[in-house]
Length: 631
Ligand SMILES: C[S@@+](CC[C@H](N)C(=O)[O-])C[C@H]1O[C@@H](n2cnc3c(N)ncnc32)[C@H](O)[C@@H]1O
Image 1 (tube, rainbow, N blue to C red):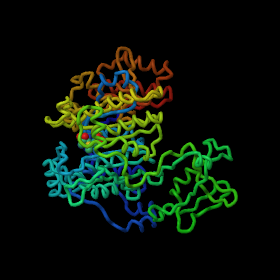
Image 2 (cartoon, rainbow, N blue to C red; image 1 turned 180 degrees about the vertical axis):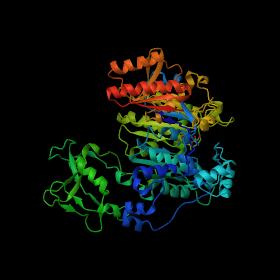
Image 3 (cartoon, rainbow, N blue to C red; image 1 turned 60 degrees about the horizontal axis):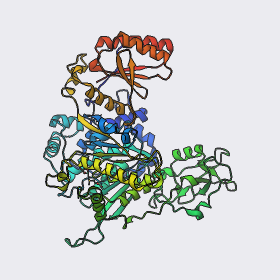
């Protein structure tokens, strides 16, 4: 029997909608015929008449390059990830779960997609605003021919030619900016937890475009607010109307899962909570389960009968109102015991637990006193003694956003346009303030600094160098200033970076199906194999900070990551196979469920021998152990 082959860089079947079709197939197989063709009327059965009626309004954002952007979102990365061992082995960083990743954020987001899917509570980004003077130009080195692009993006040849013209001409049009942002936001959404929130800084150059883009990516229903941040105390007088604000667009992954308004707590509020039924989650207060609908609009999917599982009684929401959540969510809340029924009237209510109520003051849409640009410039100057970074955001603003993103003290926070690293600094500061354990992931391009800039003169040749130095300096400052840091306070960070794929690696793609390989695995030194391992580990869903365990199989070194055993090196012989089986037999903690072979280092004969030996072993022991050959 053949061992299944995987090529992580194979985009032969990737198109502008291949990922979305896969998702539909996975969740709604009945909507496809036996040849895999979509049957629209089956989908209308799935969503039901009411949903169809509501979606009659047809309105969408279009731009030159949209189908190209969708193709980019679906493609696999074309880089590897490697770690900065020297930095990561330092004592302060060894056990850290904070991450700073160097590289183009689209590549990095793609690498993170499996391991960090639905695990980020809050994303803050401050992308290039496309002011004309901020250096934004569209930049990618994908090499499609117009004919290829026409086929993959499902567009006309003429459109394909025009798109390739602008992607290659360092354009900064609205279309170029939207093409840049779309795939990044699309993947960012996949990383958000179901109760996650994204905050995006922007100004009037692209705010209108961004709002519509986010409506498309996150769903208009999930728009939370457009905040106005006052960035200058006094307006500049170089315009007819002095502009002294920027926007921060806020979207939820799922609007029904977030409560963005913070409640001031204090004794008076606490006294409203009690625990008459000895609820194991502690003291609670009953709160209304009905709502007026978002923005005063009643949400149809939130009007249905809630059934009391004990009595079978059914309850509709009060007149002109809907329930807070849709049916699926309400059912799961009943199962969790978070929805109860009043003794006297029987009506359902939501239990809000004291230990889940967040402290803070209510955030309003106008952020007037959350630090000005001037303050953030001072914050940088204080750390670096120089103005090494133009227009960082103030710490106070970031801390406020992180808290209002309803992060709890263990949440993961992502900023993939890290700049000077204000988000990372804010996360560490907040942890020091409240003994929290929030983690950050920051991504920054090694963009060159201007040779005439203070940053360059101070030795920072790339912006990434500034990000790294800021986090280190902030960490030192916190250590110095805070006397009561809790023992496990994570003030370190690990560094990873993208690197180009090995030369010739992709040339083999077509040959793989013909059972022959041109690429020579022996050309790869240990460092290269380590980069493959890091890349595969996250591809297989392990976090970047989870260490791989070296496993000795006689003289052969294998690596265990979660339940995957990676066999990367050449030279897997009979002795190694025997040692492997002996370890499976004798070591009760060693129970991988999948073996991943590096195809270029395993001849077909060795692959077959391993497969046969494993089949015999797993049949005898009645265990599952898959094998896959990966390229
Ligand atoms: C406006 S700055 C962010 C400033 C940040 N909020 C702060 O407080 O310092 C945007 C940053 O995104 C970076 N950037 C732009 N394109 C990028 C990309 N494709 N991948 C990663 N970083 C990128 C730029 O180098 C710049 O440092």
